[in-house]
Image (cartoon, rainbow, N blue to C red; front, side):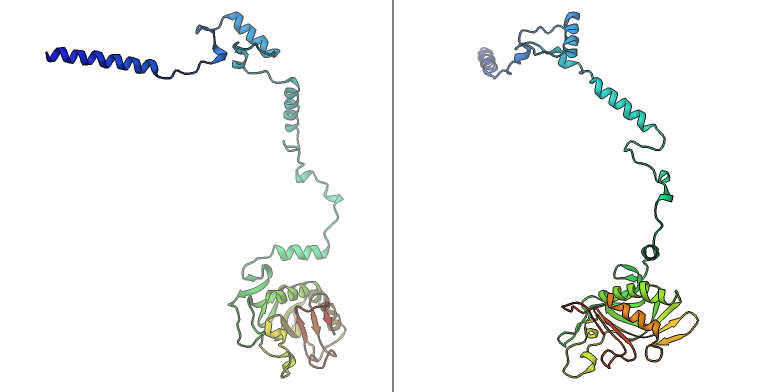
Length: 294
């Protein structure tokens, strides 16, 4: 009896499974393959496909595009263009980009660099070791921001410089980068050429100091109190000779002082106001209305 019941259950299960299989969705037939036998294409079909590839034509709906199974021949114009490009790339003196190498440039036709450009290049290629303000020829180190309880004093981005344009300073000067860069350019382009390259040191009379202008009580804060000023009192040459502003304010010193007006916002020296008879005062104040040169 048990065997009979087991056989009956198996028959019923197989029937239900067959019904589920019949009700399962079938894949949608490909209309392009409709009516096509699974047998491999005949030689005539392949030939027809090759002809269709050579001369493409619109296939009728429902037909098989045997030509799509074969690569389309490369256009003749493209073939000829690639051959010409390959021939050009093998020519001496050119690469695929058509760029002419440097050794083929006529250097004789190029004008020689000016002295100013040569100095600039020398300055840019100098060692940046120990430099500040992003300029290789300004030597020193970055220091902490200087803050002050006195309103108007302080240097947010302070640096302590020891030399500019290869000329050492008699003492480390605490300034900001605006005055450091201006002094560096003035020495390189004005002072050093004026001394025929023999300038080796500048004596610094003053740099950062939180004080009023000319130390006058009640006056505005000096640019020295903002780190944007420096005072130069003397120039030392390679032979040991020292030219001071107080005792040697000759034609040469007058000329380099006057030229400073193109580099600094304020230039003060002998004869300007009575407070600068023994030194040059240079600053990069945020003055409105242009430079103040006396």
